[in-house]
Image (cartoon, rainbow, N blue to C red):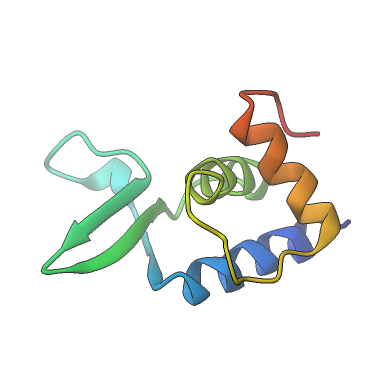
Length: 93
């Protein structure tokens, strides 16, 4: 599957799980910050460094979503393989 399509599916899954993805330039942050999941006032946000390359975005978001309960959410078979690899600590191809 093309990387752009993979990331599109990951964004869609995050949305279905109630996770909003925010793209911020974390390099210019006053505080040391990295991409990751956070909860603010009961809502989940994934802060993604806007300077991150697409393949790294796929890796980061896959790692996050692989830890979520995906019961009741359709996951495309190719993406299911990516999430399984993350779940077992293997590198994404």
